[in-house]
Amino acid sequence: MGQLISPTGGLRWGANGVPYSIAFNDQYFCQDNGYVEAVHVCCRGNSLQERFSALDPVCPGTFTIMETGFGTGLDFCCARQLWEQCAPPSWNLHFVSLELYPLQKKDIARALALWPALAALGQELAAQYEPLPGLVRDWYFHDRRVRLTIVFDDAPAALKRIKAEDLAPQGADAWFLDGFAPSKNPAMWSDQVFEAMAVLSKPGTTLSTFTVAGFVRRGLEAQGFKVRKVPAHGKKNQMLTGVYHPDFVLEK
Ligand SMILES: C[S@@+](CC[C@H](N)C(=O)[O-])C[C@H]1O[C@@H](n2cnc3c(N)ncnc32)[C@H](O)[C@@H]1O
Image 1: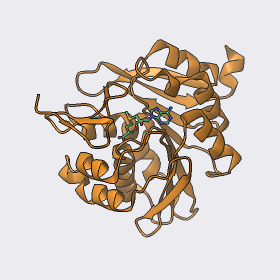
Image 2: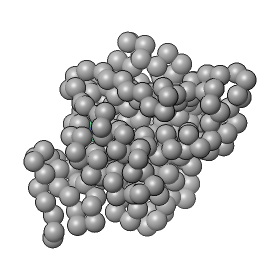
Image 3: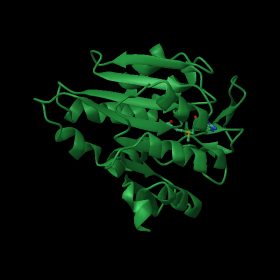
């Protein structure tokens, strides 16, 4: 098969360079073109280009993206790349993610080296990345205009810590949900996760995810996210986008 067993023990590299988790029997990103898929699902799914471009340069602030499952950092790099292209220089991006089984920096560097368009951002991330299991870490990029916070903990606990430790006081503007397929890792798609997401959201907070699993849709709706299926990238037909609308639960 042309696959190598990584010394991390939990990782296997496909012939096309895509990392697979042995423990979860799933890939970190799609085989066709993970970069194009990440841009489609995460950035287009949350209308980030339009929202970044519309930020008012004379009223500076922070745009916050939260993510479940940091993995290789691909989604972070896609968001950072778009931010640097579209957002006014007076604004900051805070990207808050969580990770229980962190990859090693060499694996992050190898995964992100797949796409020349992300090579520089991937190298910069891999050079700084140093996971600290159980702890919270912060890194700054792009003249401190981009801040990456990762909580190295189990998803429900990590989300509670973001609130309890006030790690992102302004709450989430957008969510990237990416914790392996729900059938392979239901713990990342639990009601506790959806509840904690609602606590960290505000009216108008958006979400996107590659999955359209029924229990994910229902779980998000029960917490006040209005979700809908939209066209996906590549071989997949559909993905989910959503908007937090707290009155939605009461209306149902
Ligand atoms: C599909 S990968 C995420 C891909 C990632 N967004 C990227 O850009 O590469 C899912 C990630 O969720 C992490 N994960 C799985 N279960 C978890 C849990 N219970 N709590 C926190 N992270 C978890 C895995 O270690 C993996 O890195």
